[in-house]
Length: 433
Ligand SMILES: NC(=O)C1=CN([C@@H]2O[C@H](COP(=O)(O)OP(=O)(O)OC[C@H]3O[C@@H](n4cnc5c(N)ncnc54)[C@H](O)[C@@H]3O)[C@@H](O)[C@H]2O)C=CC1
Ligand SMILES: CC(=O)[C@H](N)C(=O)O
Image (cartoon, rainbow, N blue to C red; front, top):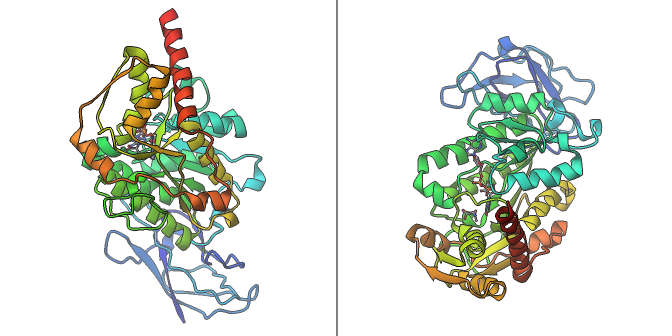
């Protein structure tokens, strides 16, 4: 006789019981009255104490499992072991986490629809608006919903669907996913490295508690989930030049700790529950049309804005601080590519991606080729400097290149030219107005 634990749930539901690799997709049905027995602790379980040994597929009906489970349960013929299905029961928002790779039985499968239906959380930050634009081009305007807790500028509001969503509000998130038949979730909400150090409690809530909500929703509704990680997921004891995908990860910021947690939790949900979790570790991202949100690499964006507007730039990192960087178009394309990559090409679920690596001095020299009068001074921010000194100098992204064909387009000279063209034309328009 086997023992099986199933989680608490406040509504009628069906849980798949077979593991990711089991072809038989055995499921059990439970009704509300079944969810009675619990164990103490923040995670509660109803327990089916026993059920019949495995019997041949299509023939078996396993009856009267315990006081807890009353309805029929089909057990697989393949001899697979039933999974323990842990489900959180937090106040009035119990969550269901399904086991098995076919977690999509709650959701719209891709065969039902031409395109994925995408929700982007934290979409009003540096990266979300650009990603929405790229995905809308590919999947159609109405198939990509931007969300955030901030008020969108009017051009963003009028460019496609936008919705308020606080990732700390689990029920609201679930409602959005259900009502909009979401199939892909891109989870961008976060507090970045520098701002996280100035508000650790909030960073912990958004980056860790928020992620838990996202993982549970994604698992429950069979979503494909993208969560970005970062060069900040490494620390002073990691190899820094270059930093491979798999090595010691002991970051010293709440941001880094939360991102290692996200990588591990996503991979755990993938292996345990079959969640289609995909993660890229981004380097510092440089963009012209959106402002960075409080990171250590922000200087590499600010130099362009200040250089064009004032001809001066005060850098908060030392001139020889080398960090991996990438132009936003490469970053967003990589994100779409890894989301579209066939699962069998992914030998891992978390990949480094990179494009270039430079110091503030090297960047300033390149910018000065175009803006020869630019004056750069250095006023070191000790918090940011300490963070930067613990991060990778060069990122080894060979696994991404080999597995799913990652290739960057922008090197330092193209990056500088593109940024200056963009910001220069923007400021000329602003002056003309
Ligand atoms: N920009 C970069 O250089 C890099 C970014 N990443 C990651 O990419 C993702 C997006 O980054 P950015 O756009 O640069 O970040 P950002 O800081 O510019 O934007 C984050 C967004 O999250 C939103 N947010 C905060 N609390 C929220 C909550 N409770 N509910 C919903 N939304 C909330 C904010 O309003 C903000 O619009 C983040 O996860 C970040 O860690 C990773 C490496 C580099
Ligand atoms: C590299 C990042 O994750 C971000 N830009 C930051 O500096 O915090």
